[in-house]
Amino acid sequence: MTMEEFNRSPSLSDTAFASFVGITGCIPLLISYSSLSPIQIVQLWLLSVSGAAIVSVRRSDANPANIIFIVYLLFRCLFYPSALMALDVIVLIMVYSASVHARLAIAIIVILSALGALGLLWVQYLPRHTWQDATFFICLLGLVGTTALAGLARRSQLDQALKFQAAQNLLQQETIENQHGAVVRERTRIARDLHDIVAHTLGVVIAQADGGRYAGRKNPEQALHALDTIADMSRAALTDIRSIVGVLREPSEDTSDLSPQPVTHDIDSLVSRVKESGYNIAFIQLGSIHSLPAGIGNVLYRICQESVTNAMKHGGPQISIVIKLEWHETEVTLSVIDNGRGASVPNDGKGNGIIGMTERAALFGGTLDAGARPGGGFIVRATIPYDRKP
Image 1 (cartoon, rainbow, N blue to C red):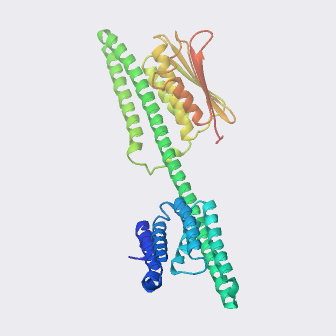
Image 2 (cartoon, rainbow, N blue to C red):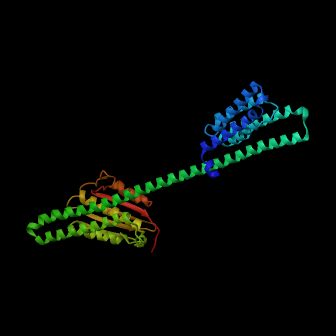
Image 3 (cartoon, rainbow, N blue to C red):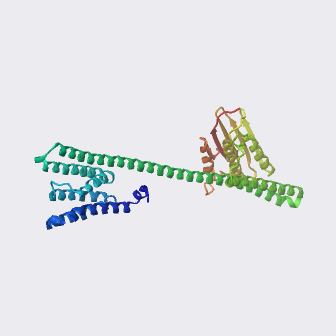
């Protein structure tokens, strides 16, 4: 077993030190047993056993062990006030242990008690002081002081290690929470995208199916056109869903989607599909047209898609829809206006209605307002800032 492994095993090292103290305390009994009085024998046994017991728990119960050691030191000075013994090695062990493991106030008391015991021993030798005695006691004083300083330095090192570990744990916890938050946000984004795609597609499919059912009796060609539109919309929705779910399977190395993209093309495609479903819809742009970052363009398209779907769903069969895109110096405003018979539903029960659109706009520092128009119908207006890029 290496020294590092020995130090990492508290129970083993404490037992070894306790055995060492106990054996050291028994040395006078083995050497001078015949010359000792019964009282001295009992005193030495008590000091040896109690010293070994204190050392064995000096780390597991540091504060009680050091308080008991102070009492132990008092009795040791009462029993043998003018003699140094091998058992006194316990003083160095406990001074170091208290400096490292005990409360700071208790550690200071232990250090002062050890120095006081040395002072008492010096006073007992006072009648026969020599320069050798002075040198010896100065060395003892320096040994106790050095042991205390070494223990306090180790204490500071352990405190720094604990603070570092606490900071590491906090950082790890924050990282886990941030990762969890990112997962939740990504799930929410995917849920919104899926909701927008499916809701819009089903709205068009239902409209085409109803129209095709009535047209099938009188105009089979129109019914076939409706079926073709249903198939095209379904395939487009399936492609969009696959593109969203594909992001979850593995990251794409193609970064072209991150470049600025024209949102007008996507809205033109949306308008064309809605027109093919038989709805009256128009798309107007005001100002100088610019490309937008992919994130902002996608948000504007999803807000437009959701607003048009809600208008088709709640506005009635004769609804007219106007999509207006206004380009300004540092922001773009999307308005979806209809003349339907009632306001769009503010929330679908899953947080993906107007609340979801508002959250989408807020992701890029934008705002969204929605409500009934004074003359009838409904309007959704989203304004999102952007860096102007020609």
